[in-house]
Image (cartoon, rainbow, N blue to C red; front, side, top):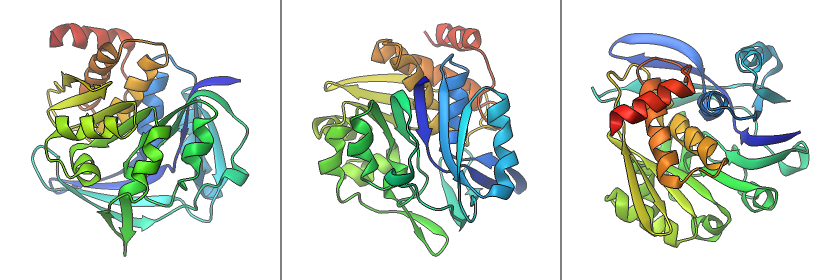
Length: 290
C-alpha cells in the first residue's frame, strides 16, 4: 500500500504538571501528528517502538484508522512535562524511560509519499535515516529528534553538528523558535528560517506561541494561531507540521497549507489531546482568520 505520510518515532507515556494539576496521557510526536494528518483525509502509517505490555496503548490510533507498526523494545518512552508559564511557552521535560533506537536494518519495507522523522530525543532515529529515506520519498524532519539530548533524565538542547551536511536531503523541516536559534544563532525567526532554507532545507516551518512561520525559496509566509484557550498546548508543533504536510502532499500552495495548519492547530489547542475536529471546522476557522 502507498501511504500519504509514514511517521517514524517513539510514542510516549506523558505525565503533565500544569498549574498544580497532574494528568497522564499518551503522547509523542507521532501520536499528535498522525491524528492531524488522518483527520485531514490522509492515509497515515506510524512506525514506533514500545514494550509489548504497552501495545494496547496503540489501539486508540488503530481504531481511528491509522496503520501502526510496533517494533518491540524493552521499555516504552516515558516523560514528565512541567509547564511554568501562563502562555505555556516555557516547560521543563524530564525523561523517565526511553525505548530502544530504530535501525535501517530492521526498518520495514514501506511505500510512502512522505517519510516524517518524528523523534523525541537524539539517538532515537539515527542520522543515517535521513539520506536513506530521502531516496524513497519526500523527507520531513522534526529538529527536536536531533538536538534534544538526555542528560541524567533532563532534556537539554545541543547543537546539531552534522546539520549542514544533512539539511539538503530534507524537503520539510520543522522547528520551534528556541530550536531555530540553536541551529542558526538567530533570535529572529524570519532570519533563522531564511538561513535554514539557504542551507538546503526546502520548506522550513517554525512555530511560536503567536504564529507559524514558513520559508520557501527565500520567501516568508506567516499564519496566526487563534486559540480561545491553551488547555491543549501540548502537541502544538507536531499538529501544525502534520497538518501542513497533509496539505502539501496534495500540492496545496505553501501559504494555503500554512494557513490550514495554523487554523487546525488553533482548534486543537483549545482541547487536551490530539486533534479531533473536522476539515469543515478548519476551513471555518481559516475564514474567520481573514
